[in-house]
Image 1 (cartoon, one colour):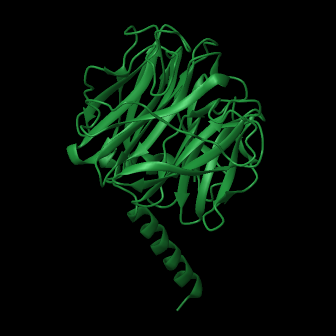
Image 2 (tube, one colour):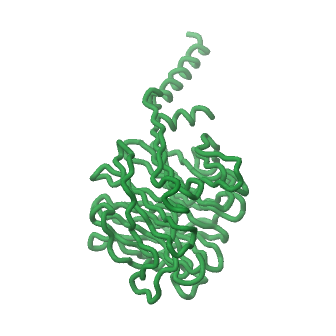
Image 3 (tube, helix red, strand yellow):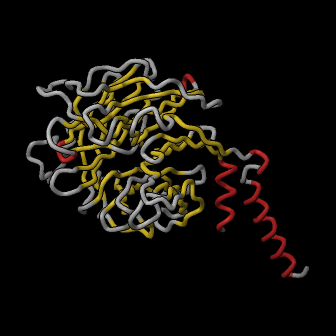
Length: 370
């Protein structure tokens, strides 16, 4: 038999096998809507998403008010059915100028809500930051819980967030949250955090389950300065953190689960204008990163793809504008168990936009660049 024919046949079969792993193009889903539309409030920013699996709903939260750090800023939440994303009328989860548990002063402002839903206990966690004095350098982290899928919330519980070598001798000052937690098991999750105090530092805090609720145990810092808002993702190759930074590029660090320590932060080949990003792993262990692929603006929101977690390439642009005053930023990126992706982000600072797509649409974008 002709060896050339054999090799060509094998190559053809391999190519067919790869294509068969992709979802048929006729099943492509890509649509969008607004969680908070323009005009409801002067500004809206920093969305977060969670899947409420038992009731087949999405929960979204964000902060909104007259301006960032404004005294009227409140944290709002809304839900939508997974199969029909018609968002409910937003409700207030954290009111403006509330006095948090243990505080003497009322909150000057609020920011950066972060959701986590525990599948076992069916408890929803809402992390957020509150400022009583100063700006973001004076922010402190809290969280609330809900046992009715976000309809009502508990009193605030403080997050300590102190890590070895912390320059903040006061403990919790300047500690903040932004990206979603990562579940390591049914008993533990990692909360990505960062410090606005003195030196910009990224770190994670472990929360372990105790009496059906999670409680903070220990925190580990990522060596390196100038990084903020880490996003965590885990594949068979390891657990990674990707951060915004002041170097002009996204930075990353790898976690050693046995030693419970992060590697030194280093730059990737992904431009970053010191703006928030978010990441996810695909069903094939690839890594997706959403962010502003630019050096000095937030006028485009891009989807990037990597097979090894280190080398990324852009596969799609969700939003783009030539208007210097426009921004599309602060993505919140999650995936449901049936392979559907949901993305929420700040839309021109006046609304929160939501995108929904599936594996078939994603495969189509990946195939275009390969």
